[in-house]
Length: 250
Image 1 (tube, rainbow, N blue to C red):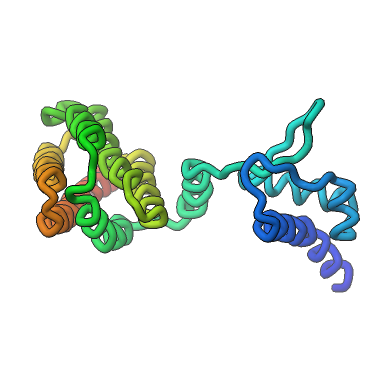
Image 2: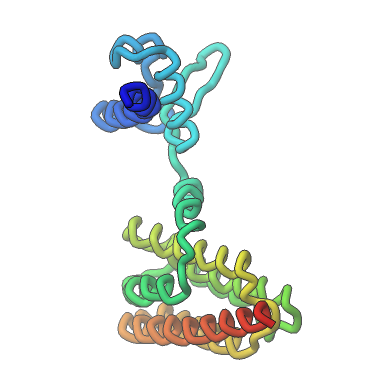
């Protein structure tokens, strides 16, 4: 028992040092590009073995928090964690959670109408043009399964773009992450084996109406359109998933 506990403790030490280095970064007010203390300084500071400190740094590199450069002027530096990397790491967790479409849309129904309302009348012409350009990627109903998938991914990009524009960074990140999760569900659960004209038509009509509300600055209409869009999209996606399930059973 004692040997097992000792082994477990040794496994935890690098993670403990990694957390301590995170605290060092925050408490020291370090920013992306700032140099961290040397390996020898960290060993002395935390009174840990060289192997433990090195493993802690590997953990932080894998998390995207630090980066190491060799050669003159090299060392270990604070890295800026991109939203894409943070989203990818979080997605790795949810990949194994068997999320349902209902669970995904429960979050979307709660958040996306409020995001839409907050953006009404606040977007620049360039931002509105970017949203219009996304809509032009699926101007007609899909004719093949591949087009169906591409249209749906592009439609989710429309929502991802709204998330990028959000003033509230946390709200924007969560909504953008949910759009990524839904994109992944589309691909690895094969939800779009056949064209679904109803889903294309309903989605495009709602997004057109939403753009009009955003241009006019009508927050109430933007909220109502997005809420209706979420409800309709959930119903159609669940029906599509059920149809795919039947084909797999058959």
